[in-house]
Image 1: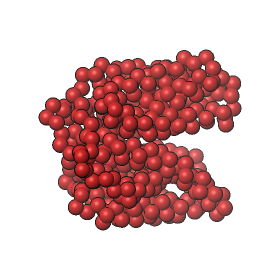
Image 2: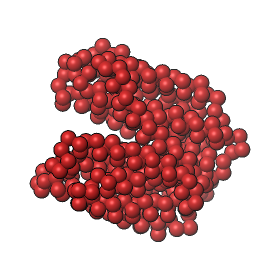
Image 3: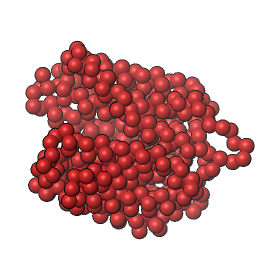
Image 4: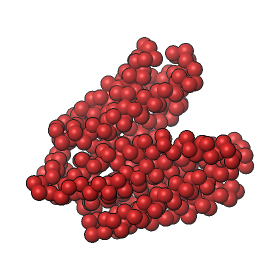
Length: 376
């Protein structure tokens, strides 16, 4: 996939940093804001949690329509639209007089974030192709930084829940003039006579993302449950270390991925993640093992995007939304299954269940590695 000479790689990379900082912060705002939202609107725990579902529903919808919008409007118009929708959504949450309007704002904010996610990742992948993995890893690291900043904003303005969401809205508005002046790449459309989509390979990438995100989110969801009987109240802090490891891992992966082919980087990362996940069965050293799992998993999401664009160079805008949307559905499919296993056999089975997910991830990567040889 050729990069137009008019594209400004540095400007695109810095814009992606801002985008992922924003959407990482937004995603991390909801949970810490639950007590204030409950008090403001007089709702219970079950009702307040719906706002997270609304956010992910909006994100899923934004991701699904991103491919159509990119082919119809191009990168710059979609960036402007996404930033505007995110600003309206976050601002609506902050200023909404009723709970229903908060949920509507969460759907809009999620849709804007989903559009920005796909569009920014694709712009970086196209602009830096065929060596996009380092840039994609750095961009993804900023998502983790945002996820750290978001709860700190909530803490700084407590008991007022509105200011952090207003900060997100303001940040999205700042993106508008920035995106309007950026020299974005053109959307690559399949040439006449181009080979059809290799649906079997695409299905492999879908499974890869389903298992990856299920494993990544699975650790954050169940690590504390597994460690609490042994470490007590300290167990919750180890999840923060896991997220910090993912951020650090993506920063470290940037120079490493510039020396390795994308598919090799993903293969080695998945293999290391399985080794360390198995090591987490020993509860005394499990906190360190989970940190090493985070370091190992860190490069997989962004580096696989680079691999995907190498395998589908003329259909990146068509196939990327499919796999990213599947990634968002992964935990919804696997979390209930893990929950049933834990309920039946107790928290000691958690590393085994998570190891099973990482094993499925590794097997999918190996199969794709052989399937796509010569095209990446």
